[in-house]
Length: 114
Image (cartoon, rainbow, N blue to C red; front, side):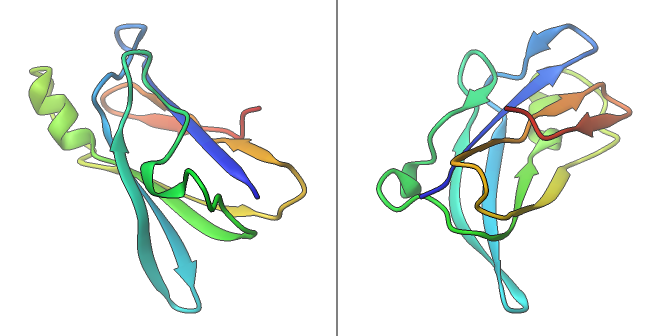
């Protein structure tokens, strides 16, 4: 069983992006299907996915979609990127993967964390 966590940081303010909606999807053959959707906590993190508490993940291609438009509107910020979609491949060589999002309004970046 593979686990996945994420966190989102607003690098413009230097603060976590609390309440950011995130969708986790998996690619099966040629189509994506939603596995879970939840919001970041007060620290901007998602450590557990509601629908995956028992089953976890298996090797394959996944994507996280962060709803930046709703978050920016809630925080009176201009919307340039309405969403950030991060696609990644889990090979199963690690028991846990961490995929963060660093957001700065007019740009974002990511990396494979630990």
